Image (cartoon, rainbow, N blue to C red; front, side, top):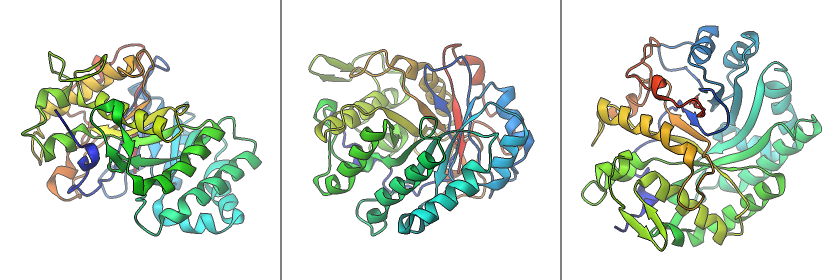
Length: 353
C-alpha cells in the first residue's frame, strides 16, 4: 500500500495544541499547557492537574509568563519544552542580543522551572521567506543557552511536519523533498553537532482522513491484526511506525543518521471529521501510549519520546475538527479513561500552545 505522508496535514489548518509526551524514560506521566482562547486559565490548578496524573513533562508553544510563573511557584518537577513562536523568529535571528534577551526573559528569569527543550518555530515551511531566519535564530538561542551555562540541560531544536517528505513508501526509501534539502540539511547538521533531537509532528489521523479508501482505520489506530506493509525484513502493522521510520530513513539519506526523533505532536480528534469519534480517539491515544515504549521496526527497543495532542478541547477553534483533540474538557474533566491504562514504565507529556 503506497501512502504519501506528505499530505498528513494538508487541508487541515493547524490547531492550538496540547500534547502528551510518551516514552520509556521514567515511571511517570507528563503534560504541557497553554490556555488562552479557552475557558481554561493558566494557574497553579493546571499544574496540579499534571501532578495529580503523574505527568512530568509539558510543552508550551509560546512563552506564557503566567504559565511559567505557575510552573515555578507550584514547586513542580515538570520538565518543559518551551517554544519560540514563529512570529518571533526573525527578530531573534537579527541579533545575538535579541536572543540573549529572550532567553533572559523566559528562561533564566524562571530559575525554578525545569527546561528540557527550546523549540524554535513550529512547522516553518521551507517555501516561505521566514525559512531563511530559522537556523540563525536557532544558533542565537543556542548561544544564549550556552552562555547561561545551560547547554547540557537544555537542547535547542525546531518542529517540522511530515510534508517535507518527498518519498515515504516504503519507509526504508524515505527521503526529504529535494527542494527542502537546502533548508533542512544545515539544520540537521546543527542538531547533530549539538546532540539535539529533531522534533517532528506526526498525525496518522490526517493521512487516514485524506485517504480513507486506501488507508485502513485499523492500520491508523494500531489495531491491525496482520502485517500491512512489508519492507524487506521490516514489517509494519501501524501507520505511526511507518511515518517515523520514513523520517529516520530521510535523516540517514541527509547525513543525520545519529539524530533521534522526538514526536512533538500526535493525537486523534473525538469529533468533527472523518473517523473522528470518541471511541477512535480513546483507542488511538491509549494504543499510542502503550506502543511507543517499544520503538519502531527500524529502531526496535528504543522508546520514542512522543507528545500527544491534546490536553484540553478548544471550543473556540474552527473548523469543527480542531475543537476536539483534548483528553480533558475545558473544565478539566477527563473525556475518556486513558491514564489508568498507562504502563508503569511509560511517561506521558501534554503541551499547550
